[in-house]
Image (spheres, rainbow, N blue to C red):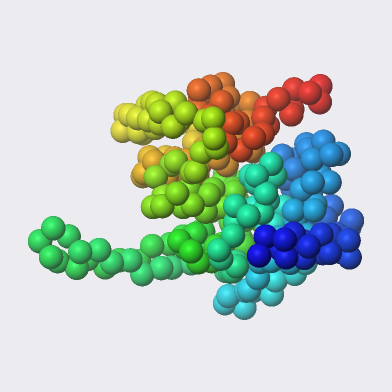
Length: 254
Ligand SMILES: [Zn+2]
C-alpha cells in the first residue's frame, strides 16, 4: 500500500500544477501563507495538489464549491502538516462546506438517565473518522478565528484517541513536558476567563483542553509572535510537534 500511494502521489505531482492566478487569489487574504519562504511555498503547493487529489469537497445548502475555495481551504489545512506529511490526514476524505454557520442536534444522557437535547450553531466541526465540516462564510470572512486550522488541528488531536489536547507526539518529545506546558497555559486561561479578564484568545478555548489546543494552534500559525510571547513553553512544544517555527519565520524576513 505504501509504495502504491507514493507512486500515485509522485504521478499526481508530475502531471498537475496549481494555476498561479487561482493560488494567488486563494491565499491573498492569508498573510501567514504569503509569509512562507519560496521553498516552503513550493512544499505547501505540492501538499495542496495531493490534498485536492485525495480529499473530496462537497457543498451543502446550495454552496457551489469553486477551485479558489478548494485551494483556499487546502492551503490552510496543509500548513499544519507542512513538515509532517499528508498521511497525518489519512483515514477520511470528505470536506463539506456550508454557506454559513450550521445547526447540529446534540443529545446527552445525564447521571439520572435523563436525555437532554439541544441545537448547536457551529462554524466548523471535525467528525472522528469522518468529514470536516466548515462554514464558508466563517472560513472566508471571519478575521477573529481561523476555522480551517482549528478543525484540522482537531483532526491531528484525534489521531491519538478522543481529543484531549495531546496529538501523537514524535519520538524524542516528552509527554510530561507537553502536558505541563498545556495544563499551565490552559488553567491560567480558564482562570482569566472566570475572572472576566481580556483573554486575547477566544474564551471558547476554555471549554476543553482539546479546544484550547485547536484555538492555540490557530494562533501559533496566524499570530506566532504573540503566541510565543504569551505562551513560551507551549510555543516550544508546538514548534516541536508541528516541526515549524512560525515566529522565527517572521524574524528571518526582517
Ligand atoms: Zn473546536
